[in-house]
Image 1 (spheres, helix red, strand yellow):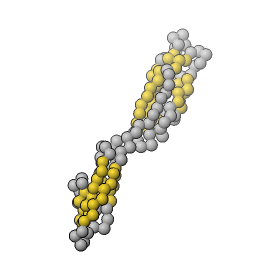
Image 2: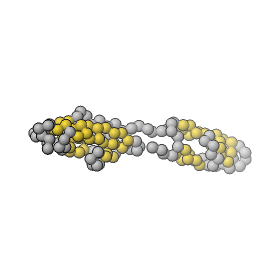
Image 3: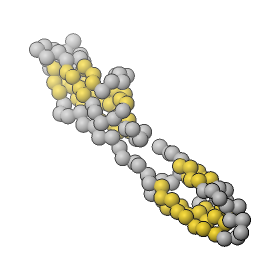
Image 4: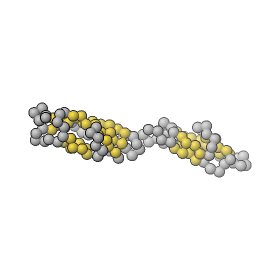
Length: 135
């Protein structure tokens, strides 16, 4: 995931950013926390230097589907719940946080959870079907 930040400065006739830009505003796309400096030169030739810290938020959502599950003729389905994100996509195509699994054979279900910052995490769970119950 790549996101840019707009750094802005005002009040000068020339600008010199630490990333090489010489405009009043510059876009940056750092891959780690970075401090940028700008030196602004005024119409009278005086200079002022300022800095801005760009902090990278790369926290991933936490998802834990729990222990594997089993179904049989007495318990023909299993509820699987994901949490920790704002969007969910299951291997079945479903997009809710909770799905009902009713497989006819042992199946691995995966979910990809998207956090509020766009970062994604995947987890999986096996739902085993009793051999006597398999269709």
